[in-house]
Structures are given as structure tokens and as C-alpha cells.
Image: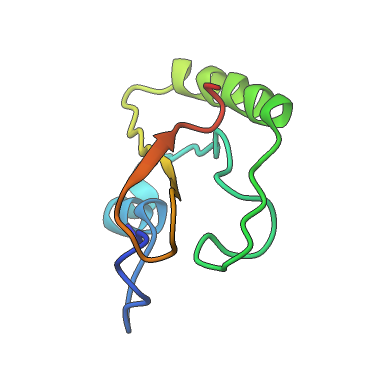
Length: 100
């Protein structure tokens, strides 16, 4: 997983790609995003556009439906932290998109 302090590694894979690569064609791996942290661009840009709460709620409802049909659920969650004060300080507050 990439985070605010991690930079961009030379080689990486997403959680979904890793699972699908490991199990191959032996297992169906349904996927539903749930909600977004940002809209467009990248989480590591200076200008961050938060996702739309109504869209997040709809996507989370769909993710619950997909999860209810699965034998196993892998849930990856992240919180969006926003700097308080000057840039570069570690004091933050976090919210979970879709739950606010």
C-alpha cells in the first residue's frame, strides 16, 4: 500500500493484483471499490479534491452486496489525513470517506 510518506517504489502491485496473481484462475476474485479518497488526479498532489459523499455511499452499498456473496472478504481501508497548519507538519486529523 502506498501512503503519504512512502513515495513511489520502483516495483509495486495493488492488493487486488497480488491476490489475483497468487490464486490464478483457481478462484473467482470479485471486486468492488467501495469509495474513493480523491476524485481525479492523485492523492499525492498538492490540490486534493475529496470524493463526493453521495457517490461514496452508493459505492459502499454495492461493495456490501458483493461482499455478501463472497466466501471470504478482504477489506482494505485507508483514512484521508489533511495537514493542519503549515505543510510538512505531522499533526493531522483523519476521516474515512463514505462514513462522514
